[in-house]
Length: 47
Image (tube, rainbow, N blue to C red; front, side, top):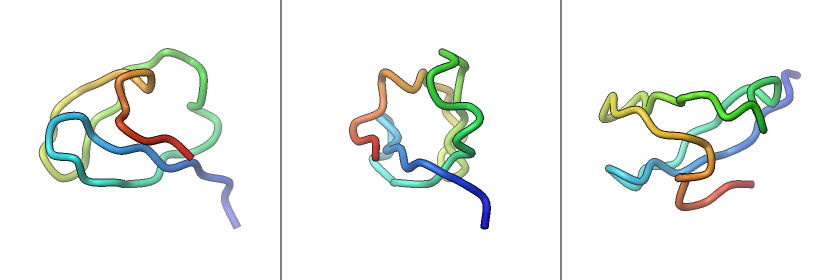
């Protein structure tokens, strides 16, 4: 099973998971729902 962490888009507020290999790298994440880009630190919720 792949290791993942959850983020919440600051634009549409939907939650989705991202590969743990991207965690803490300060990359731009793209929401699969609204297609907006944001940094992990901008996520409204991270687990």
